[in-house]
Length: 214
Image (cartoon, rainbow, N blue to C red):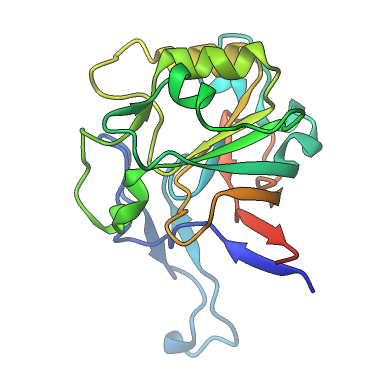
């Protein structure tokens, strides 16, 4: 029997955001039960890169494809979760050489020491485990369709030029950020991470799930 694992982080006003991004707000400025209306009609104010979300090429690549222009199946299909919790500062190319990536896998999720805490409810940590440019190049050389990381972003504050983003998105390797993999064992799963069908944008939210028969 299939089992589904939710790897999305809980999203709300308390959720940690990337420095400078707006803190999300939920409100009921119109209809609400408290005002005697027949329904609650909520509003959301926040960024497209808040919570568990995806990056499309246009996020960093001028003239790159926008979210709605990417094939839906890039977000759906077989993936491999790699246990990289032994890496002390970043995920680099040599670490992926050691990770026993299966031939033919096109979607990779990196489980790192970031997953050891509820980082989404803690202050921004500039020392998170990030994706090194060499790992991004490792992925693009192999035609990887999607890379996921268990933190708010994949580039560290020490890299203001965003080399991992530029390498991946420049080759149309999509990015899935803010996933929680603490209780997910390394192995092969079916990834279901289709974003909301937003038009003309650089990224968007998704409810990321892993499907397994185990």
